[in-house]
Length: 319
Image (cartoon, rainbow, N blue to C red; front, side):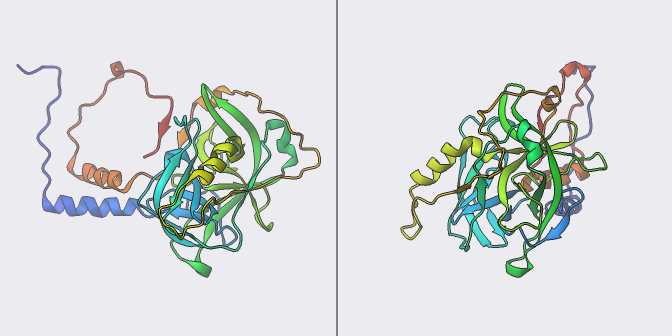
């Protein structure tokens, strides 16, 4: 017997024309976005590369890329101004549950050779330190071109907060201010991109954070890698490559900010209620986008949820 309260619809019909149109529509969404609100082109950040499918990562050693935990993946191409290689393994920070512990290392099947790899900030930043930092630079990857044609996008900002906790999640974030329009600087596709602790024009920029989330009313939150230095170093040292020609025991280059008054203070737990509204910023997977395109054209036979079905989740990922 039918439930008289349940809404019924005609079966969805997937015709060849709708299939082709759906795939075409989906392909429009899998192109990498320029992202970074208010950004400009630059060739100064070749270490920030794109993981094919939409998200970013930062090359920190010949065979290693640092990215967000929710952006971890394998069997995809990492492409940067220094070169490109396939990702053959991923290592997500133990205890990861978005937005907490949102960090991952990706191993490249072949090395990307560079004369110098990105140095990471050794000093753990707290709110009391931020006034001494000055301008910072957010940089992402926006092109599949190689060598001299590779182009990143960047935007300068200032740090406005540092948070150890977001609710019950250990996040270890530094927080960049929003765009002058009130919109977040980070956009869809920017997860895993880099925060550098200097103005855009300075040589040898120091990596201070990995793009994790949008929080605190349209501000951009970055995980501080130094909060998990032991895990990062041990993961590289203990990795046993299957390729006998791969350099073993690769290391991350840690460098102190060397600010005169930057005191070494242990991490303090800080909390702001606004951080409870957190959104991850990866591009959706290609298969998800393809299905979305089909669903838009064919009409998904889904039951509409009423308000009786419960509240919306506090933490939501894009894609």
